[in-house]
Length: 255
Image: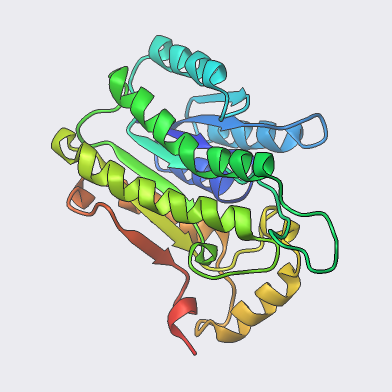
């Protein structure tokens, strides 16, 4: 079995790669890292290998069609197909749409880039996997959303639009791929201390509010999500599709 993880070098993607490996899965990881952060991706790949599993990691732009084709070619050559696709890309613009203070505002190019990387790319990877015969009956598609898909946050407009689109794409994939026996679900984690969260203006306040609200007395951790996604990849979960599944310890239902 093999899991393909988009955004495999940090955060939820990295934790899931290691969790899959420990559960006996090979892992293909797509990430975009420069020299400074490349060691993090290499450490994840090494962790997969240390667990006794195959690690095929590609340092490419997941939103580049030519690079996507190259990864698909490599997966075909390796054989074995892909049983799980996890979309965990966090690369977008954090600017206000209308800045009443006269600061830099979101441009149309930045909005287009954010939504393409963090939402639309899910469709192209999913479609290529199916058309190439790499994913078939029993396949699982997961996408990482956040409460930002339904809550407005300062400077989060582009990412919020991407997350809302991502959830819509998952619903559409769930319907269109159901006859092929492939499920698609969104995972909405609680507030989690990840590199992506720390780039959001005011993230300290978000963390403090979530910690105070969570009935379990702590923030969500990347391993909480990683263990859930491995469990949801079980053959016994075939009837669950098209959902937004909250993995937050009760954060969003506690006043």
